[in-house]
Length: 254
Ligand code: NAP
Image (cartoon, rainbow, N blue to C red; front, side):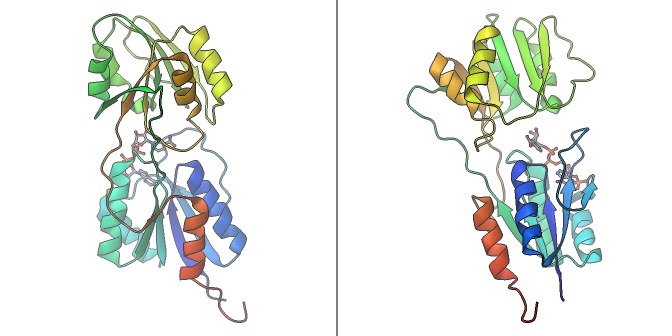
C-alpha cells in the first residue's frame, strides 16, 4: 500500500486534532513538528520531531529528504515566521502546502478593545497611571513590560517565566488552557484586574477571558495578528482533513 507522507507543523490544539483525524484514516505516514517552546508539550497521536529546520531552505531540504507529499501549516496565528517559511519551502521544493487559519475573534457589543500592533505598543497603551494588568502572553513576549514598572502584573504562562521579570509587582500563574469563562471571571475579580493584554488567538480555548472582560466591563489591549502568507487554507480541522482525504484518495485494494 502506498502511504503518502504528511508533515504537520504544529504546536496548537488544532494540529493535534488534524493528526488524530488523518491518523484515523490509516493511510498516511504522519509526522508532527514542534518548535520546542514548551517544556512538557501535550501528548501527540503521531511521531513528533522537535526544533527549527534552519529557515525556509532547511525546511525545503527536510521535505525533500523525507519525500514528504504534503505540508500542513497548523501553527499558531502569531507564529508568522514559520508560516512564511512554510510558504517559501513549498515553492522551493514543489511540495503542496495547506494551512489551517483559525479565524480571529469578532468584536461584540460591550467589548472594550484597544487594538495595537505589537507588545511594545501594548505596554504604551497601559498608560502611565498604575493599573492592575493581566498579561495572557507567551513568556518570550514579556520583557517589554519591564519598561512599565508602575503597574501591578498578573502573568499567566504555560512554563515558568525564567529568569523572572525585573518588575517590583508581579504574580506568576502557570496554567495551560482551555480556560472556562466562569473561572476567568473569578480570576479577574479576585485579582482586581483592570486591564487584560492578550493576542487575538481565535477559537474557544482562550475566549473565556474575553467574554469575562466584556461582562465585567474591563479593557482588553489586543495585539493584532501578524501578516500571514496567502496560501490554500481552511478555517476548521474538519474542512482541512476532508480536503486532504480528497487530495489523496484511498487507492483501490486498500
Ligand atoms: P515563529 O516566530 O513563527 O517561528 C520562529 C522559528 O521557530 C521558526 O523560524 C522555526 O525555526 C521555529 N519553529 C516555529 N514553529 C515550528 C514548528 N512547528 N516546528 C519546527 N520549528 C518551528 O513562531 P514561535 O517562535 O513558535 O512563536 C511566535 C508567536 O506565536 C509567539 O507569539 C507565540 O506566543 C505564539 N505561539 C503560540 C502558541 C500557542 O499554542 N499558544 C504556539 C506557538 C506559538 P527555523 O527557522 O529554524 O525552522
